[in-house]
Length: 122
Image (cartoon, rainbow, N blue to C red; front, side, top):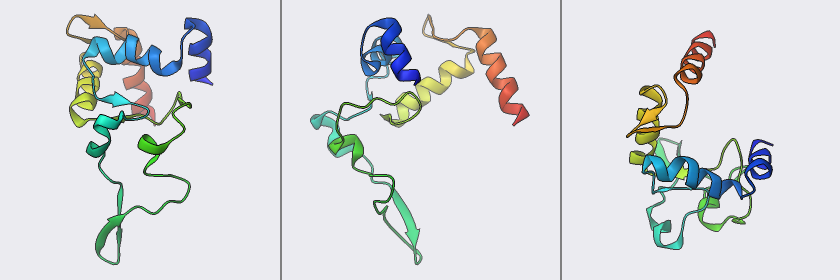
């Protein structure tokens, strides 16, 4: 619902909104719902331990090839992004800086403080 709501309010697809409003300003150039073909070979396989050995995760409710082979038309407001570790670290640094990174404020200090407070409660 969140993604759909953002699309209605901002008049653009949710993935484009995230790229324009979050990823580009923070310098997160390797974060996508669906990986471009040029980056598909960088996707690390999801693995699980079976009988003492790491094996590729079997397809059940989750398709580990989804970021490459998915429909490329569904942009979840609560899940589904693939990102490079450096991009995730960049996002976390913004969070630790109380919502700001490299002069760009994504979240208010109050919002981040409330998030920290709620996390401690649960």
